[in-house]
Length: 151
Image (cartoon, rainbow, N blue to C red; front, side, top):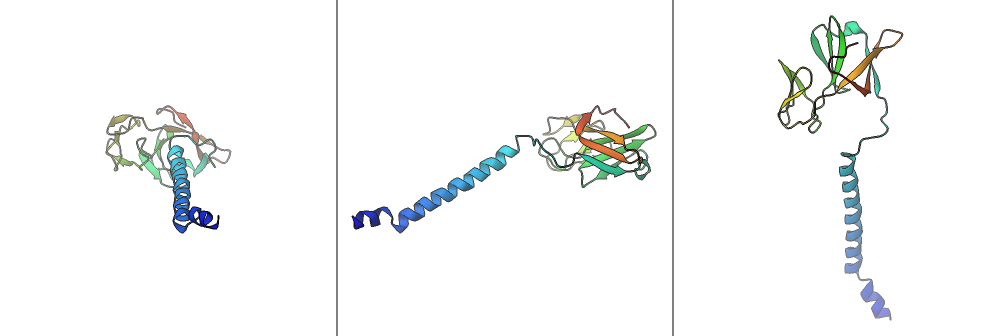
């Protein structure tokens, strides 16, 4: 009986079982991280972000707010906010002369965020802006609006 027990629990069997368990755990975490890309997050920390006063944005210019991944455009008729995240794979887009360009995969968007060419299949989202009682501009990243919407 002692020999059967020793054959069943050899070092080789132990290492085989341990490697199977570790590979299974690693596979589980890989699967979870892959699924997170396709399942939208239900809870986001703070979707309303204070941007400052209207005067802090130059006229007729797209101002890039890197920490929030958005562009703010200001002209004489108001302000508007567009995402600076490419809808293809999430790269940060750049403002170019007549639209927006993704440096990663070459997607090109018009000034209104409409896909013109490249790998992206969805237009850039525009976000709702409002001001609080102190006159600070706030962008609500949970509310999308039409590209012509201005505060």
